Amino acid sequence: MTRRAFLEERNALWARLRALPPGTPEFEQVLAELSALTGWDRTRLLAGLGLRPEEVPGGR
Image 1 (tube, one colour):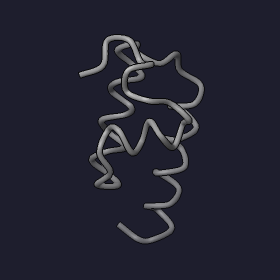
Image 2 (tube, helix red, strand yellow):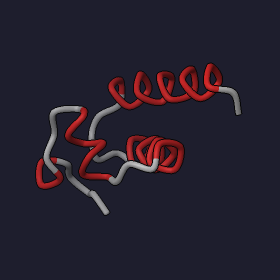
Image 3 (cartoon, helix red, strand yellow):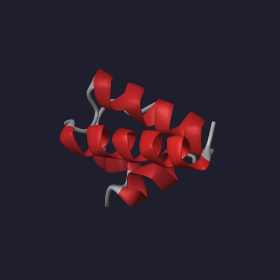
């Protein structure tokens, strides 16, 4: 994957994540995809959204 492709995919996943209600199955799926792409853990990704794990219902 080129750097440009990586950045475009990463940015698209962040945009999708911001548009979804936290704790929904789709939110968790996009969160997992972004984690796999970036290597960031769930806590770090949630922090990027201004959330703490305990604020997200249904988290794994």
